[in-house]
Image (cartoon, rainbow, N blue to C red; front, side, top):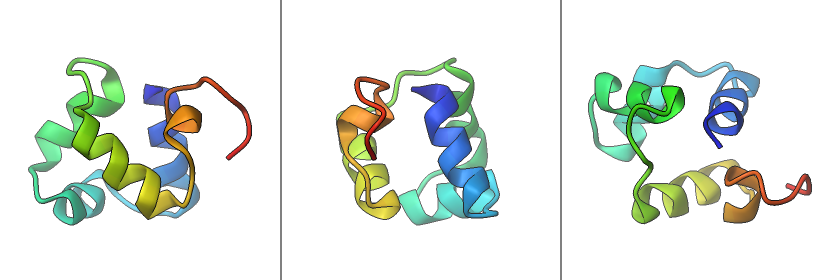
Length: 66
């Protein structure tokens, strides 16, 4: 999952800080999601899926179909 959220962000040429601001959190907090240091809460998964126009299953690496 962590690789996927990083790749989606990079594909949009966005920084961690920009995504963190969109989520209403700090860059440091978001960075810990991308590194796997912290688990991503369900509400954040929902927000990321909506933002990237993809499924939660894709974010969780359960499917390769966006």
